[in-house]
Image 1 (cartoon, rainbow, N blue to C red):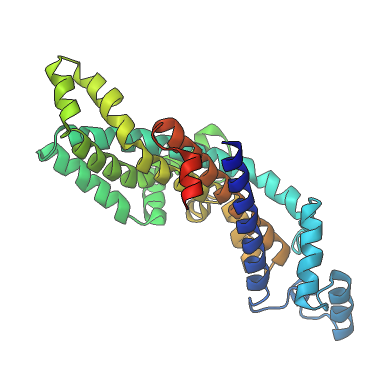
Image 2 (image 1 turned 120 degrees about the vertical axis):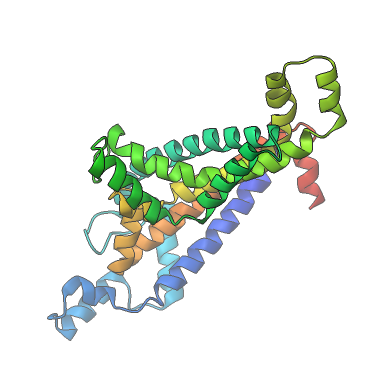
Length: 312
């Protein structure tokens, strides 16, 4: 297991290195001069050149990249061109809000998705199964911004139950978290349903029923555990995506998270901030994928992580 973890950490570092090179090259192809944006259109050419030299932007790109990575290793992600504050400070200030939204949304998604999938599988080919899977299909096709606007109009404007947008309290969290949860639950419910239908047709399930076990024990103990691997994979990807910033939902609800920060950084050509956010998202994906791989072994002991890794 230790060897497996070391290999996974090494591959994660290589992935992060690739992401850093890609993000560094990409932001330098975005149209617009960040120095002009900082100084304004009235700045003279001499002022622009002086600031460019101070920021090291007149150096060759490989030199800029190596200098940047040297600072990143020391925990210095640069200074925001917009606010002139350290990038890492700005990101860490926004990350708790995004984490709160992401975990609340994925928690709702798991509860709704597993429940819908298990009920649909239990009552396979009935009207209830059809209605639940139709609801899941609608959830997959709904644009997130549209659903966000609908819940604001109904629950905030019409009923007045929740604040419209802009806060970070628990009441402000309900609508964006439910919107994320409903949308994310659609995929989980379909995966759960298809896996449960297959598992419930196996001989050991019929044997369990013949022994007189309660249906709830059969569903939760004998069937659900065998369909969790694809579900955990999807949940892991959803967590990584949401922790990287649920951009559209944060914009709709004016949620002060990473997504909102990323949109503003891109609009202002804030290169250091964009690079910092991309690296954070890459780091989150690497860590979450590693945790998901480890969960496979806990869910299904037949999966030998070390053997699987060595066989690749």
